[in-house]
Length: 204
Image (tube, rainbow, N blue to C red):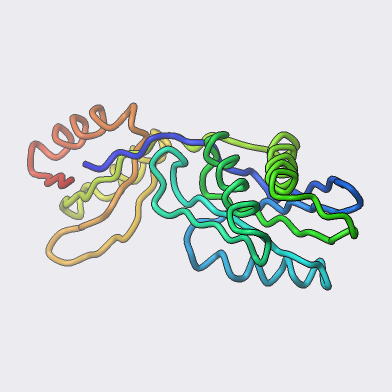
């Protein structure tokens, strides 16, 4: 039985811009599910804002407190002044499954290392303030093996609990992966055992 904790994610992409000593800092927040989502989003940022001086970014995939992957990139800014500050804000605000790209148009006035850290941090923080966020509910994943006679009642029970049925295969029996809200996981296992008179197999 695998249980994932609930965490905060973006409801929709969001954009926010600030100006600091004539430089424009534009933060684009995008929901992402895996590493494959990153490059297309970066390419889109470059297409939307051509001729910018820097496209700095950071992402958190998974729960920000226990992420599967994190990364940051300064894209030519002095080391540690852009990507890492962006990432720090995402993690401090505990937002997961998110990519933040900050586009900078240089305004002619150098900000210095401290000024850059503040600017990249501030625009990311303000973008999160303006974004629509939601909480992903804790889910428990199980592999279930049942006979054909119980497939429909299984589907109905999952729908009633707000769960999902995935990767169904039909052979001598029905084998499937299910996701159930964690608060109902024990109830679901007890129900399935009773419904099948103990003939179901539940694997973690």
